Length: 149
Image (cartoon, rainbow, N blue to C red; front, side, top):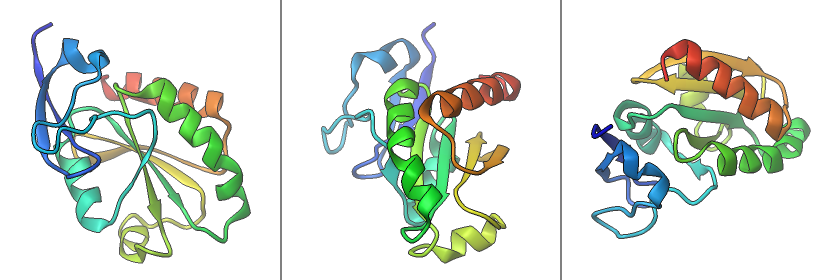
């Protein structure tokens, strides 16, 4: 497959064109030259969130969380493990609902942690409650298949 995908850099937010067969070859950003994937989630503010969700041509899994939330903190290591397993085919991101309350309101986040899967700029699936790494990976793979990945 020779299709080019738009991938937003987690460091400088530049949109890069990456051939799909090169995703697994650790591509770097053409602007800042840092890796596009580092097997870790990326923390997003409102502007970065909008860019990642709208411009990435891979699914974006967002963990809506808060620093005071025990289940959120319990899930955090599993979310990072899931990032290592799902990248480069899924971008994993975190939104601190205390630091970016406008996003929590915009997406009507009523409980945390809440995972929301976005594809093509729109939300395609949502799951509330803490999950372990394997459950996150299974959920994303099942929902991505339904969403057309």
